[in-house]
Length: 109
Ligand SMILES: [Zn+2]
Image 1 (tube, rainbow, N blue to C red):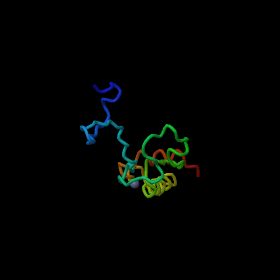
Image 2: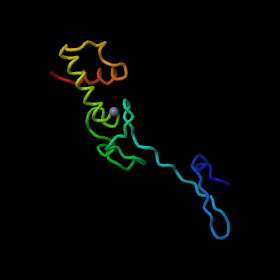
Image 3: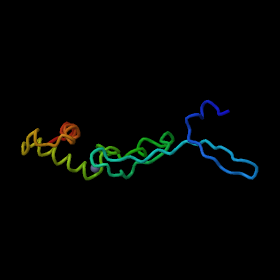
Image 4: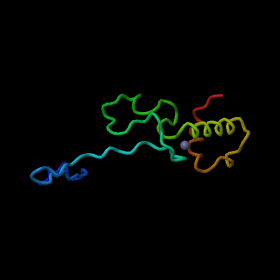
């Protein structure tokens, strides 16, 4: 019988000399992906984060671990143009709106 704590783990069958044994193991999670363009994020570790320090878990920049650098730059560009009045609120694309709004609150001009 399987231990109750190991029921939800992935199982793998390994053939030995006498019989086939079942091994249970925890699957390593997939890496982090950009919320806008779905590109794989750099600097974000996979697996167990409990033993890492806070700065090792994600990049310390705003939207680090959420957006890739290209999307972050375009959000900041939109936020600056919105703050200076070059574009209107309706010109920002709907998918970026949440991040641009957050960047506008952080920018001090
Ligand atoms: Zn992106």
